[in-house]
Image (cartoon, rainbow, N blue to C red; front, side, top):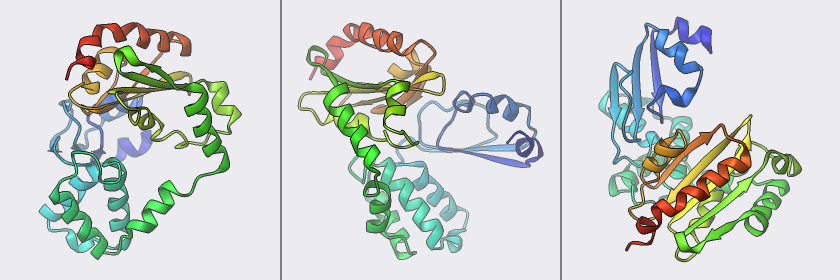
Length: 259
C-alpha cells in the first residue's frame, strides 16, 4: 500500500473522512502529492482533501458513488458487476432499507441498479443467509451469555474477549450487526458492542432517537460516525474499557431517559 500511495496521481477516500481512521496509512497519505478526493456521508469531514463529494443526508457512500457517476456522465459504465456492488453498499448501509436515511431517491437509484442487473434477493441471500454454524453459535452465545441490560440508562451491551473470538473460530464479519439486536429490546435507546481484537478493543455504538453516538464516540472512544451509528476504539484493557463505558453512563441518564 505504501508504494501505491507514493506513486498515485489521484486518491479517492470512500466512506470515511479522517486520516485517523486509516491509522499509519494516514501518514503516508499526508506525504503524497496526489490529488485527493473524499466521497462520504459521515459528518464533520477533516480538511485534508482537494475535493469533497459529501452529503450527510445520503443513505450511503454507495449511493453517492452512483450520483457521482451520474453527475460526471459515467452511467454508461454501470454494468451488472458495478450495479451489484453499489446495491450491496446501499442495502447494507441502510439496514436493508429500513433506516431513516432511506429516501424515495434511494429507491429510485436502487431501481436503476436492478435494471442494470443487480438482484435484490441474490444479494440479500449472499450476505445474510450464508452463515457458518460457528457464526450462528457465536451469535447465540452473545445474546444468551454476553448481553447485559442497564434498564436505568435504557442501554444494552454485548462484549467479546479475544479468547471468546477464538472459541468460536471467529472470521471477519461474524459479529457484523450484532449490536443492533440490543436495540430490538423494548425501551432500549443506546446499544454498544465491545470486541477485543488486534491488540485493542473495538467499539460499535447504535442509538434510537436523539441520542448522538457520533458525539459520544468522538468524546470518549477516539471514534465517530453518524448520529445513530458510530464506532471507535480503546487502548485500555478489555475489562477496563467496559468499566469505563459503564462509568460514563450515569452522565447521560437524563438524555437517555428523556422523551
